[in-house]
Image 1 (tube, helix red, strand yellow):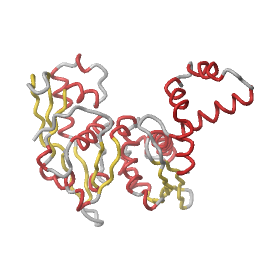
Image 2: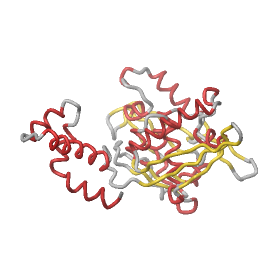
Image 3: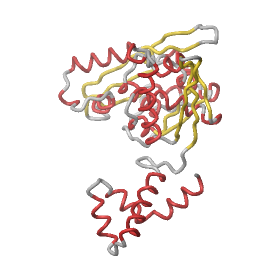
Length: 302
C-alpha cells in the first residue's frame, strides 16, 4: 500500500541495525538522503507500507537536482537505473561471510497520478531485505529526524552519524581504520592515506556537531608510525532544535549581552538591528522571546 504523504523534514527516520552497519559504498549523497526519506515514509511496523510514493520534484531534489522540471525523461530513467542497480554489503557473521544486495526491487513511474495531479515515482524495497526495513524490534534500531539527513553535507557524514548514534550509550567507540573506511564508504584511492582520510573525518565532525543531536571528538591509535584505529568519544546534545541548537542560541545571546554591557549601549533594539545584517534576524527575534527559557534548558543539560 502506497503512502501518499508529502515530504517533510519533521519525519522520523527509524533505521535498523543491519542497515546502520551495512556498507553503502555505491551510493552518493542524494541516494543516501532518498534512502532515509524512504525509511521516514514507511511504517516500520507494517510491511504493507513498503511502497512509497515520491512526486518527481521530491525524488529529483533529494538526488541533488536544482531544476527538476528541466530534466528529460531519459535522465530520470538513468537516475532510476543507478538507484536500483546500487548494492549494499551486509556482513553475515564475524568470519568474513557477507551478502551484496540491492536495497530497492523496482520503481514505477506514473506520468499523471490522479492522487497527486502530477508525475510520481513509487519505490518498493527488496523483499529479501524486509527484515532490515521492518524487523526493528528483533534487530534493534535508532531513530532521528529526517531534517538531519537533509542538512548533513556529505555522504560520509550521513553514514558516520548513525554509526555514532548507535554507539552513543557506550560514549566511546574504537574501530579499526580499515573497517571505518568500509563502513563510511570511503574506500577510494583518495582516502588511502590517513592524512587524506583525516580531512574527511574533520569535515564530518564539523558537519555532525553543528547539525545533529550528538557531538563527537576522536583520536588516532597508532602502532609505530602507522595509524591503526580511531577512538571516538560521543555525547548527547540536548535541546537541539530542527534549525539550530540551544547552545548556538545561547552563544549568540551571550555575545550580544557582553557587547551591550561592554559598549554600554542603551538602545538594545538598535544593536540587534545592526546584527541583522549578519543573518541573525530569525535568531534575534527568537532570543527576545525565549532567551531565558533556552538558558535554563541549556544549564539543565550541560
